[in-house]
Image 1 (cartoon, one colour):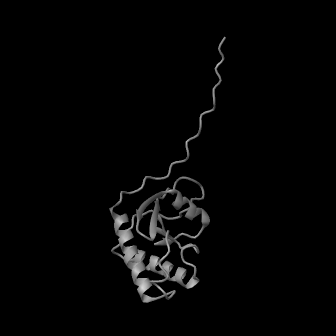
Image 2: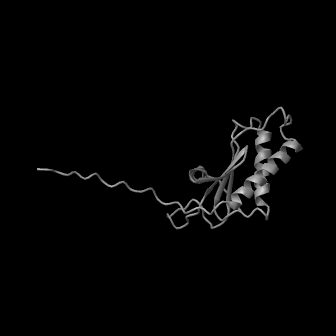
Length: 147
């Protein structure tokens, strides 16, 4: 499994389809198109994964890092079966700080792990993505002259 590193890679995947959602997470997927350009975004035909945990939904750095670690750990499990494509797991809602008082508690990690397993199980049932096609070129306007 390869990790997404550049902003362009994340943007390409986020432009793709959302294939699964749970209460707190969304999984985006983009098919790999290795032959499209001289410098492709994804160098190998492998499973690519990125994690987005915005400060808006997890204020403490220790919480963001714990959630990212859970994302990479759960996704690396052999029984997940992610397709050979690029994926981004995005936190889309915050965990209740009244229920999860500690920034990095075992209770929070367990809740995150359970929800990620549910997210990846839903994604495994979704169909494979089609490769990205270049945007359609707009035809030049033709002027018709009437006499």
